[in-house]
Image (cartoon, rainbow, N blue to C red; front, side, top):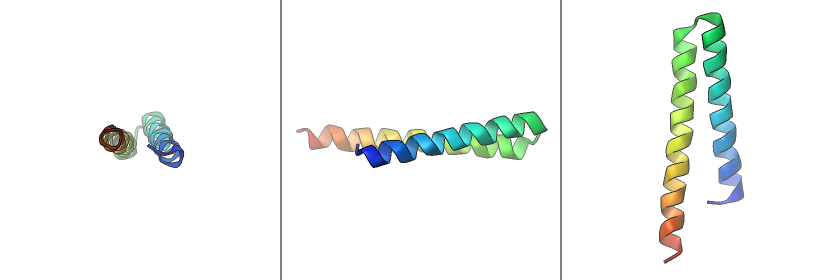
Length: 58
């Protein structure tokens, strides 16, 4: 995984955490769910990059 990809995934995950926290603070279930979705998407991207890296090492 390239450094740029790591930074992008971390930024997306942090943005998701921010949305989730804002949704929690304002009692906005839609925003909270959107934040959780952003975090899950970032985690999936990171997992996919790790799989690609594992195959590149062979």
